[in-house]
Length: 328
Image (cartoon, rainbow, N blue to C red; front, side, top):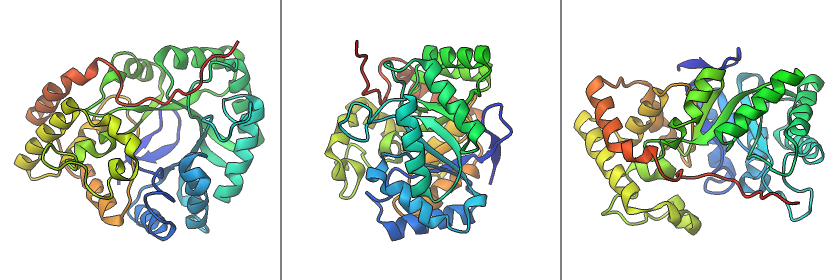
């Protein structure tokens, strides 16, 4: 396994991380635990979840799976997206974050989260309040490092500037949709992170499976796929993205690789990327994705991938989660 520093911190994380969005939803408890155990056996030390995944079941499963193994893992979770209908059931206020951290610690069966992330920017809470709260959490020993998610470049830079001015702990990472099918972070966020020492953690690295080839033009929607079990995901299945998946698949086949392996290897090679989180619903899927660590991309392959994905540097991001709206 390859390990990298997460941003400018001293924290070492596996180049391939395990995303836990499917645990308790598309993968049942026993399957999820088997996937976690296999990931640890193969050297993966970064596990990423959130308080909303599978209606909190993902965190509970991870807590059970890590019993007696907690010290082997860099454990990351998030808060900020809605957990209920009440006026304080979402956002990044001190009230909401403190409550959600305690609930996450209980479900994860741990006394400390290694990376606590704000799931999306909250326009209704002053950044100073959020950052002071996160700094207090670090000082309390319940959080080791903090990260952002779904922040625009200007929002992230504003947060870093406030932390520097006030002496608060800085965000060491940011999660963002980033893949061959979504290169929009390269316009502003990637240069910012490279300059400020913030590690990028891409989510949707395979564009929700489109870059794996499962949604090829001739395949339709396979049974058991995300678009099959979650019909709202079908909004991502546009002709341009599926056509890109087909092109990536043909290039991968010429080299004897799977399109998933090629797509992940390309992403790991990008500037400022610290770890790439990939979900799994079965052990074999995880094992296949681990092959991305073993291949080397030559200049010809990189140029071909850059050329075919160039249109995806512009336009709308593949995915962004910003349900919070400003209230007066």
